Each structure stands twice: as structure tokens, then as C-alpha cells.
Length: 280
Image (cartoon, rainbow, N blue to C red; front, side, top):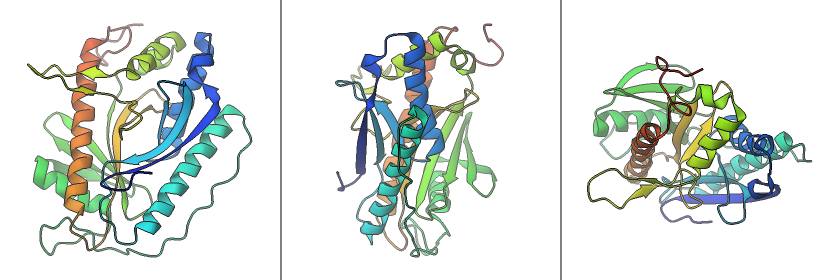
């Protein structure tokens, strides 16, 4: 566990190993387990270890920082991890134990990011305001579970999951939906996601790895084939470090979107295309 600026908890499920999958159908089933975990358990990452091939379920956040009552937040992160493991084992047909939801009574509001006396009911609300003030986003809608932001052509969904201090920022694309429906093309997309994406900025050697074991990017397909990239974060009430934590989560997600755009441009139409140029 790394609890300095970020948070990282993980567990392995050796019964599911992508290196032991031979057929396209076996690989597609294994990769769809990743999607099931991330879709079912908000804020949980899932990927295959690049060396061993074993399935890894993880809670990895770029934004954690100096947290008041960090023990409670870590209890919640452990519950999230246990939920992820349970979801994976259930999907794979393996025995599992129910995760026991911790009781959390702290933090009934008062979230902010050091900009003054303004406080918000949840970390998601505070993070949405942070995005509007720091990254020129505009709020265009909200419901009980999310706040929709726009910045130019991009849309960001700031989601709230029942924990006042937990939040997730997501961006979705439907450009993979035709590939998602075909096992062979779906596996090709997943195998590309398992490799780093190189920067196209002149002179840059930087790369972004959606399945980085040390990273915090969450990337998965919803059941309808919509592809989602996101970052999960923890906020805290009445504390100054929220601003720094929010900044790292936001920067991580901006990199998610930037490199996802480059990856989409790299892929052939058979794997990625917009709604108006969709191959059969």
C-alpha cells in the first residue's frame, strides 16, 4: 500500500490469467471480466499483470493526500477492493464472500479546496467547482448521481457514489461499440489498451499506459459497448490538501482523454469509428 500522495490497494485472482487463454473466445471472456468489475464497482480498476498475466483488481487514486481520519477512508477503499474481487470471482464462476459495507458517519458536508469560505455538500460537488474554476468547464446538467461538465467539445461526468468523500471523473466514447460486439475485434482493442500510447507532441518521449500497474487510470467498456476512461479520487472535509489532490486527479484525467484521442486516431475504422462512419 502506498499512502503518501496517492492510494494503492490491490489483490490478485490467479485463476484468471490472460496468458493461459488460447482462443479468441477465452480471451474475450477474460477481458470482459475487467469490464464487469469496473462497471459494477465504481472507482475500481482491473487489468492483467503485464508479466504474470494474472488478473489484478485494484483501488488506485492519484488524489488522497494528508487525510483527517485516513483510517476511515482506507476502510472504504478496502471495501471497494473487496467488492471488486467479489464481482470478478462471481463473473468467473468462482466461490466468493460478500463484502461487508463499512459504517461511515463522518463528513456530513463542508468540502472545499482552499479557495475561501465556500463549502459543498460532497467532494464531488467541490471537485466540479474546482474543474469549472481551474479548467474553464461549464456545468450543463446534474442528477442524483452525477454532475455533467463541458469544456469545448469535451464532456466530463463527475460522479457521486454514496460516499460523500468519493468522486470519479469520466469521459465516454461510443466509437468502439461496433468492435465491442465482435470478439475478435474486441480482443484487438483490449490488447492495444494493454500497451503504452506514445505522445505525439513534438520532441516528447512521454507515454501513457491505461493498464499501468502503478497508475490510476480506469478504462472499461459498459455493457452497451460505450468506452469509459476515468480517475477516482478521495476528498476531505475542512482540509486544505483537497486542492492538490483534485489537481492530480484532474491532470490524470486530462491525460486519459488526450491519449485516448491519439489512440482512437491511430486505430483503423474496423476498431474505432464515429457514429457517422461506422463499418458493418
